[in-house]
Image (cartoon, rainbow, N blue to C red; front, side, top):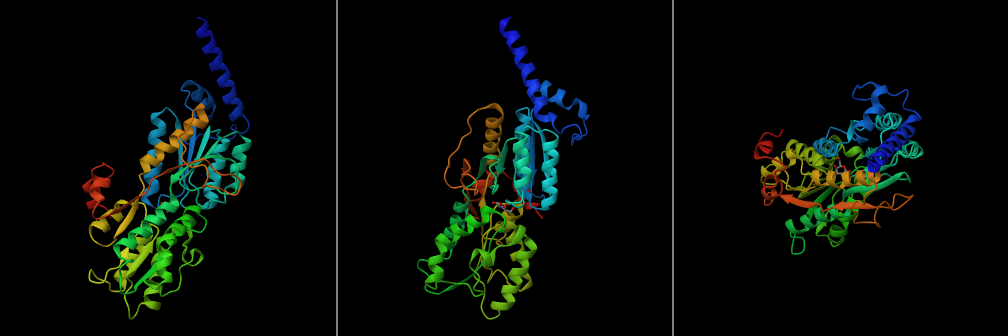
Length: 377
Ligand code: GAL
């Protein structure tokens, strides 16, 4: 009897605190799934269904669709309500999506930023409204409003790309110099900077001793980064390199930081008349289904497999931690300094994938079916 009374009191207190949390500015907002706004708070309390806003950057790349689906599925399985939004790489759209989520009184925000430093003001609004924020895969920079960060070891991704090139091109023993060009990630994405650092931790010495020759001379991050991870820009850059520097000599290695770049590079090479006989080694990142197909067909050599369901799983434990007061698993408290704080992180392990291990990594594990790969286009 006593217990029952206590739980009635507790539920009452929770209802009050939820109303207080969302009360400031929820009156003018409408629920994104079209439910009557007036019923919103009642619904939250009934199901104890706290609402999580998930802001993803774009649907133009398959990986983020998978990320969004996994997050939604896993959060809903735990009884959370989810507002999943994509901003199609438009910064003001992402800012306003977050503002709307805050105005609706979501209980937690999960954010994969388009521009990691462009959300400072809106995240400040979240902080004022006591809404905890978790950075998803991309670190949120210059803000103290972020509680946790779930990602992969981003420097490790670069190191694995570098090591793959080192081994595959047998750089330690090669007697002839090999040509290489670099296609690095977006300058507004902290991951891209770390990836370049990882690549160069392995390859710089071969550039220095002449075993690798970059004929464009573009090896620094500033010279090789590609805004918004654009496939079109990667293709354009590759076309420019091929016509400007590789008229008399083939390009041997395209060190690409993203599968999307590898598609652009492939198109540029085909346009320039490259065939199986002189096709270069091309790296990538994300193990998108199209990339795996290209790897099977010999049009891309390698990619980095980042298991998005594992990433979502880790991120969901962080959501639970900030909402239910539990402890999330953290394995890095040193690396991810966002200029305001070192964000406690969980870094998943990236894995290099090529023709030799793709079956084991993505087919046997059920991540993709053979049919997904065959029908990718
Ligand atoms: C990065 C991420 C990569 C890739 C890229 C483009 O932040 O680390 O895996 O997805 O965005 O979407």
